[in-house]
Length: 209
Image (cartoon, rainbow, N blue to C red):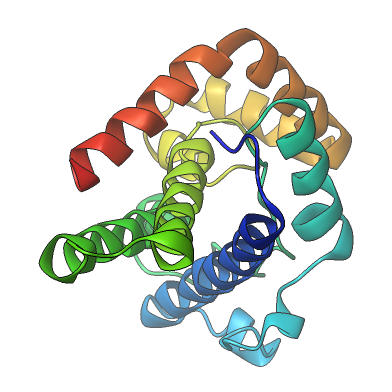
C-alpha cells in the first residue's frame, strides 16, 4: 500500500501518521469521558498535543520498519488510559471507547474523500499525493485496529459480545504484553496481508472512485 515512496511522500506519511494517531487517541479519551470515565482527562490525554501521545518506538520506528518490509504500518501511540469500571453500559461502554479510535480514522478518510470529490478535480502533484496518503493511513488504521485481537481496538467490541471463556482467553493474551502483539502482527501480515490489502484498497477505491 505504501511502496516506492519519494522523499516528499515520506514526509507526508510521517505527518499523516502523527495527525491521525493523535486524533485517534484523543477520541478514545473523549468518548470515555462522555461515558463517565475521567481517567484520560486526569492523565492529560484529552489533548491534540502530539507529545502527549507519541511513543518513539511504536509511533515512528516500528511503522517505518513495517512499511519497508511489508508495505503497511502498524500504527500505535501511547495507550490512552481508561477505567472500564467507570464507563456507562459496562462492557458495551468499553467497546464504544475501543472502537472510537478506528471509527474516527474512517470518518477522517471519508471527510478527506468528500473534500477531494468536491474540490480536487484539478489537484495534482504534492497536494494530491498528500491527500491520498492521508486517506490511506486512516483506512489502514481503521482496518488494522478493528482486528479483534487484544490489545487492538476491535478486541473491545468482540469482548463485549464474547462468552466468558473467550473473554478469559482474551484477557490472558492482553496480559502477556506487547511481545505477543508484535508476534501476532508479523503473523497476520505474512499470512493475511493479501485480504487486508484488498480491504484497504477496496475502501480507498470506494471513497475516491
